[in-house]
Image 1 (spheres, helix red, strand yellow):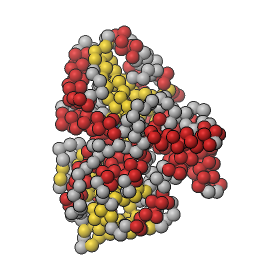
Image 2 (cartoon, helix red, strand yellow):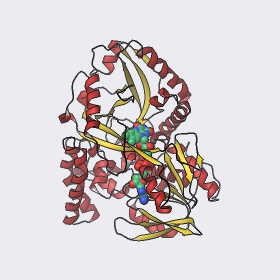
Image 3 (cartoon, protein in one colour):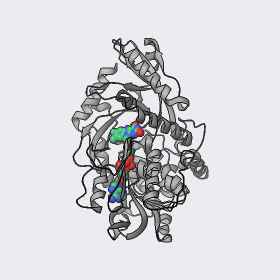
Image 4 (spheres, rainbow, N blue to C red):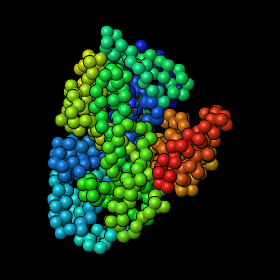
Length: 519
Ligand SMILES: Cc1cc2nc3c(=O)[nH]c(=O)nc-3n(C[C@H](O)[C@H](O)[C@H](O)COP(=O)(O)OP(=O)(O)OC[C@H]3O[C@@H](n4cnc5c(N)ncnc54)[C@H](O)[C@@H]3O)c2cc1C
């Protein structure tokens, strides 16, 4: 997947069938669905793929135990089906993870135990393993750092886990494998209209400033919390439909949760669930739910959100983590749809599709787990509204780029799937490329070459935050790794010293938001 080549293809088609705005889970899913149906598809992302909410999730591919508590059965059933589909089509990226719900009150074991049996039953033959009641000893064996004071036992259940930004890159590559043009650092800045109907977009190459007029039969707005801004590019009077809500995660070393089992706290002080999930040799704990007025591409955790998560960890763990134990803080914005928003076609699921008078199609809401279903639904709407050639969605059966069965989830480079062989070949040709980039992470130098050549990695932040996850795993260590990454990227991309300096300045600005002591 090469950016220059993709830009070269922009002129090869005079009118695209589908133009997608936004390169998060939703937009990339739409590009995969449309391109695999044979539609001429182009996607533009303002920053990097998954730079927004889609790299900042809890990393769960799940039916949603919380939605079960709320009685939203339809959403849980749909999400469990999608969980099974994701695991089937991306076995190199999604794994089966077991979760423990610790029980401190007498009623919790039967209550959560029965609820999770219902969860098993709803998953049917897409289940990832039966839930089970655990004795006190079994609970502590599975989660040895739980506070034993008052602990009665636990319930174990299963859900899926993934690396969200890596999945996004592989979706972009899947779309490209089906001849879609997908471009990062390409903001959509306006629309082309004929008789007040949208017939294309005005885009700019954010790297060079070159502008393009791109004609398309259907334009799909998949911009998450930025949906309102794009709606208002079309119609300055358009009503706001998004109400963003912020969620914060803290990342710790594995010593706080040494086992490979996640913990689910079913009821926090504000009535939510809280997860502690092992991920890339660390543990991520979250999340919160704080309404936000104005969406930002780099939202910042509030001190009270950090305190909230820390306090719950202290309540449930035998040790008391402090600020000094936090390796990274990351924050994402949920694109929640306002209840009173008028959508011309609203589906009974968690996501919303609307069509403006101009013909602009908007899809928003949902979650990572349901990205495929959202994409299928909105491409169906686009086919009907723009009279595109009919075609049935292929994505329930479509393998995601790099597809490989029997993945060893702890092995080096596993997250590339079959692409791993290319990186191993780079190392075989030049063994110095097998050296670690930083002693705190397993990532090796060859990954920088691969990311720049094949994964449209344009900045050091792209590499440190989304091609690898160093920023999310240990922000301070990622800043130490940054100069080496900048030097090598500059050499590959033939940039000079001033590029390196600018990249370092930009990266420091972003990374300091992930350090807990500066927040
Ligand atoms: C804290 C938190 C935890 C979560 N945990 C989970 C979980 O564990 N499992 C799960 O299934 N879901 C989870 N979710 C939900 C999931 O992450 C989101 O539903 C999903 O990532 C939203 O994707 P999106 O593509 O709609 O939005 P985004 O990822 O934000 O993508 C929108 C993109 O549009 C781009 N854009 C904006 N304007 C323009 C423009 N003018 N031109 C071009 N591009 C533009 C932006 O740069 C952005 O990249 C979580 C969400 C949050 C906030």
